[in-house]
Amino acid sequence: MTLNIDKEYLGELGFDYEKIAKEVVEAALDFEKCPYEAEVSLVLTTDEEIRKTNAEFRKIDRVTDVLSFPMLDFDTPGDFSFLEEEEDAFHPDTGELILGDIMIAVGRMREQAETYGHGEVREYAFLIAHSMLHLMGYDHMEPNEAAVMEKKQEEILEELGILRK
Image 1 (cartoon, rainbow, N blue to C red):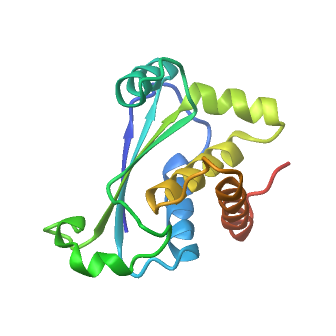
Image 2: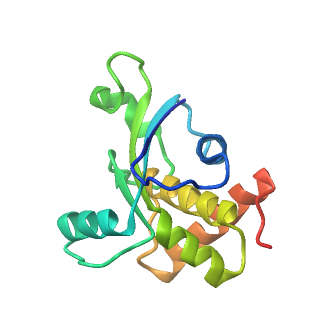
């Protein structure tokens, strides 16, 4: 698995953000039984930069906690079987499945950790697990979809021992 991390946010995070990100990405891939080695990119950025990106790509001019940019269109979330026909879904040099990009606003992440009464590590890990599910075709536009995502996110974090405190 390749995890490319671009830390645009200039401040310190106060925890090993690379290690935690790798653990959560791997746990999400394992949880969904992804049969391929995968590549994911993670950008840690400012609230202002994520606001600009949100406005550009989603036409929503406000800060958000996380944005996900999937590279694949899944007919069925978490069903990787269609990829055998999709040569361009794999990195030409490494052969890894290119899942997509995750962008996290560190300031918003910190605010939410405080608001929800748990640590920053837990919020960070939650946002990555949430985005990984988006990269694997899940969404939360309908109540039943949201319930599925919420359950999977919690189970991924529980497996890692990253719990609400």
